[in-house]
Length: 372
Image (tube, rainbow, N blue to C red; front, side):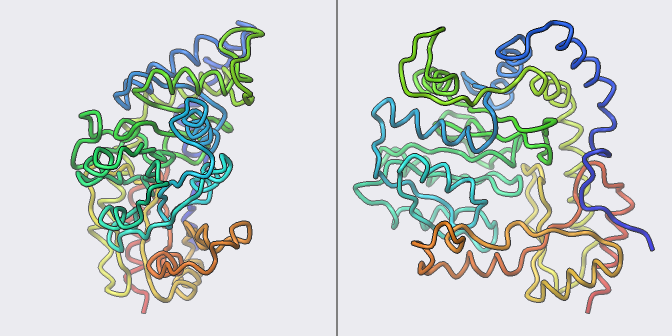
């Protein structure tokens, strides 16, 4: 029986291995492993992609978000105890970044259609203590609406993007700075380059993008022990730097991001065309999405996944337990979030990476269509 692998990092990285080895060798020969040329160039290239004035490399996606909120606190724009509106349907890292800074997450339900934060539900959650809205571009689809621009202006709220899964995606409207590219829609954004991401490093790595020079300067200092220059610490910082080897590998793969995105879009379009089983709910078509995951839904998930496994198709779940039901957030367990909980019980992630042969997508679709 043929096996349809959900994800193979070896397969995905194989086309770029030669280029990556050359760049890593250059780093080794240079003897410069932190805060070097590759990191600086990568920052400029990511800023250009996201259409922001600044990009600051850091250690991972969670740290990128943590640093953003910490920078807002350090600059006096937020205070501990302030509220941040967050999507209830997200990976726990989005929430950890908020609570790590002693800010209070206020969970808002997603749209049942997009699975992203529902902008129409945000205003009802705003209080005098609200200082920010976090949007998560979940699964590679931009979460934005003109309403978010209006709410930011009306209430003076910062909008932070969790752009861990959607580098290069575009929204159907412009954000706060007249661009529609994720990472540049809000006031600041956190990016993840975890190896499984569309633009994945060879380990952990992340980035902060923003048009705010003060926030960029503060994030850069915070990530380097709180120092703005050697042995001069302006705040009580952290050690959240990206190393030169990761930056070098990412620069290689960034050059190939357009073809990676095109391949994922082609595979998503194939699923859209060939999956016809009425028992399986497909995601909405989205021309601007970059398809980090291809999520289908069924109210018989366990039986569906077992059926696919029996037919050689590997799947995953993103995410089976929402943050408010995690043991570490037991104080939120009693929240009434029925849409979030229903989504968590229905979602199934299908193989979608650029390393998955297009013929396999059609075969997987045919297997799905025979599910009864």
